[in-house]
Image 1 (tube, rainbow over the protein chains, first blue to last red):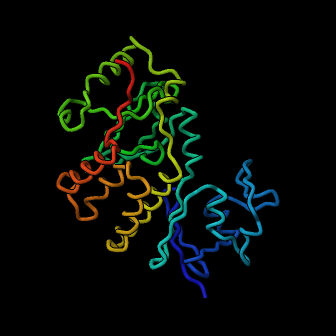
Image 2: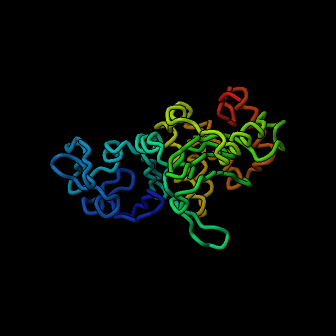
Image 3: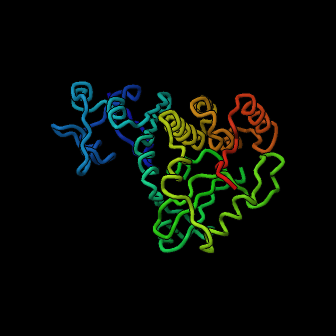
Length: 135
Length: 155
């Protein structure tokens, strides 16, 4: 028996088939197509980066235990079993490393007319970045 | 934005130089002194520095100073953001009651993250400009968790 799990990650959502949403196991194909990682003999790899992982714990039947995967990548994984949805957050290590590099993380946001603007478009100018809310 | 930059309240202000590097990290500063009585923040301190930097009359922080004043996200901060993401999705799907425990958990994990605690009030049927906010402010004061964290550098 399988069910669909909605996985929220990296600002998007993907619906993937899992046997049990409470203990999500994803296929190696989904690992690569959804999250960009691939299981190799040396660990979880994406591009030139490989992260060591306990493969005995990670591999569950024909798939990969999403909780073990999240732990190996130092990414928080929180779930709601009733609605079969999970959120895979960003690693504090990755976020911290990016900020500590002092290179301002790029982003793209729409203006009031829907036109998209990226921080990187402003290269060559001093930028005052102000985050505000009307609550 | 809050996730990428580790923002925990607004206003949050950063300076970014011509090369796209952070020249002054997350700071709490207002454009005027309208909220000075509530926040204790004098907007002039930041505005004077900002004008001097933009006009080339004074440098921004050194990289070492930026690093000293940065507060990098913790594992709990990131787990709180994941709980928030999940709760927000549930709310938008019409499952407000089921979202509530995830909002609560996010607030417990990162009680200092006002973008989550105040930013979700309206979605949760609370008034972010009313009693719910002032209760949050009072509890934060009791816990000595400041709502606003301006950079404490010399005048």
